[in-house]
Image 1 (tube, rainbow, N blue to C red):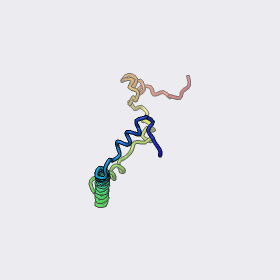
Image 2: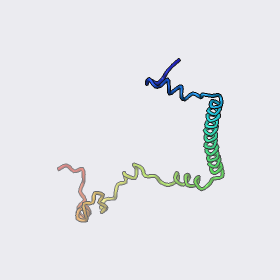
Image 3: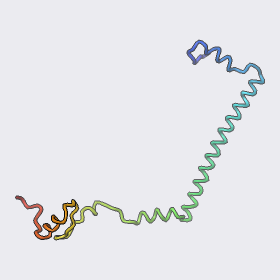
Image 4: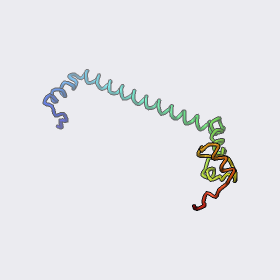
Length: 119
């Protein structure tokens, strides 16, 4: 016999939990069976709901529903890339990506200097 509890009252608690009569034992078995059935039915309802959602999604994708068009459109839209960052402005352009102000833009337009020139 294996006793899992370490308290001295564990034996008496275990004895109290056991059914005292065959009628009580029958009731405990029926309760356990009902609880087991309820848990199995709940799992079955969840599984059927999942299956239904999966079936609906499959049907939607087969007939080209509204979501499938959005997915295809997203793929066709131009995506930002490193090439966008490598666009070099034309000489004399007044765009100032660092926000140094109009005076810096006017200076750059007035006297274009070689940025790689050594001083």
